[in-house]
Image 1 (cartoon, helix red, strand yellow):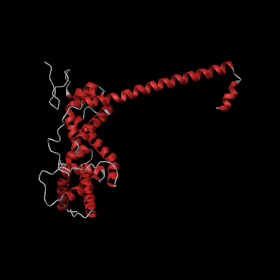
Image 2 (cartoon, rainbow over the protein chains, first blue to last red):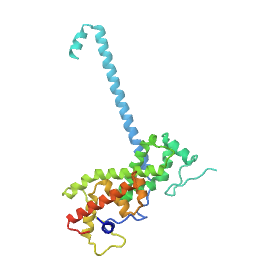
Image 3 (cartoon, each protein chain N blue to C red):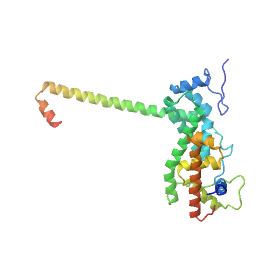
Image 4 (cartoon, one colour):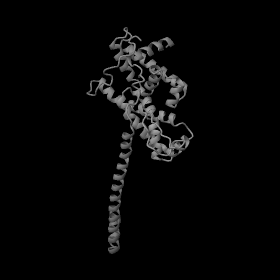
Length: 85
Length: 203
C-alpha cells in the first residue's frame, strides 16, 4: 500500500467519522460529585464484607468451642469424630 | 494570603492550603483524598478530552472519565511522584477507552448480526466540509468497518488519521514506541481497505 492510498483512506475516514470539534471536547460539568459517589461504593461493599466476615467468624468460633467442650466432656467421642473426618 | 485555585471548569476549588505540585503528588501517592480531589479537579477536563476523541460520545466519555479516575485512585500507591501525573492519567484514560471498545465489540457484533442492541453508528455527524462524491452509504459502511477493527488499531488510527495528533504524542498516550504506533496505523489502514473492498467500495 502506497502513501497516497493511505491518504485516500484517511480522507474517507474523516468524512465518515468527523474529528471531534473543540466545543464537543469540552467537559460540560464537574464530575467530582459522581466521583465521590463512586468512591463511596466500595467502602459500603467493604463494610458489608467485614460484617459478613465477622458474623461468619463468630459462628466458626462458637462451633469450634462447642466441639472442644464436647470432646473435653466426652473423650470417647474423639475416635468417632476422627472417623468422620 | 491564601491562593484561590480555579478548576479546569473555572470553578473555585475548596479553600485549603495549596501544596506545591511535587508535594501534592507525594500526598496523592500516599493515598490522601484531598490531594486526589485537587488532581481530579485540575485534570478532569483533559482526561475527558482524551477519552471523548476516542469514544466520540459525550455521556459515555463522562462515565469513562470517572472510571479512569477510579483506576487512578486505586493505583495511587504505584504512582511515582517524580513522574508526570498528566501523562500517567492520559495513559490510564486511553486504556479505559480501549477496554470499553473490547467489551462493546461484542454488543456491536450482535447488532450487525441482527440483534436488538441500538446501533452505535446511527445518526453519523456531518463532516465540516462534506465531499459530495462520498455518499451516506459509503460513510456508514466505512464507519461500520472501522468500528470492527481491533480496539488497539482503532484507537491508534483514530488519533493519527482522524484527530491528526503527532505520532510522538500518540506514542506517549498509548505507552508504546513511535514505531509501534506507525505499525498499528498501517495495519488499521490495511485491514480497513480490505474490508471496504469486500463490501464493494474502492477506497
